[in-house]
Length: 255
Image (cartoon, rainbow, N blue to C red; front, side):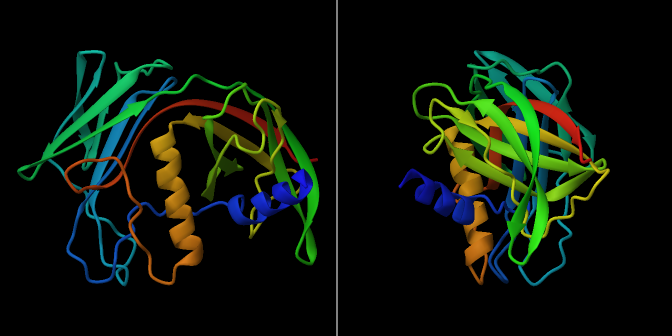
């Protein structure tokens, strides 16, 4: 029975999702889009743009002149605009277990959100395997890690092929692999991995709200004929997400 459940899980949840954050209904009025991250390895960054109608090109206008702050246990970190629509603070490196609060003031409105950085689950290694998918065999990468005991761990994986980020990500929780070794494959519906390619995988441990957001985004894009905006935890009516997450990377060469 468990093998059947895992097979269903692979088909429905692991095809991944192409990262199109700025989804919106056709002809709807523009909305502020916030994509904010705090990690344990790189500086904090927030990008602010505006949504566009579904029928328009994928060019999202940046938003300058915002006041952006992230606080950590009462310590406030202002983010400065490094380029149009992008705000950063090189002093803010996240700490697992800490709670981060985001506050954005722009165009006379305020937007806020909270994210708790999970404890890091160690990425042990990357395995390579050829699987039959449809009528052909494709290379897949299988990140191996040991999921801790207890439910409530959430993961996100991003793949880079020969230094070019693949426009797809994978998210899942620990309902299938709880308290065991996970080697769930990163299955691509349109695989581009070939022999001699160098693959880099970024593993993120994300919080429950971020997991729900990207799961909803994945579902809306894979199943809906008209995109819908996934619910998020940003107050004030903005689209997007705020993610305080751990990050680690490993590489493997296809031979």
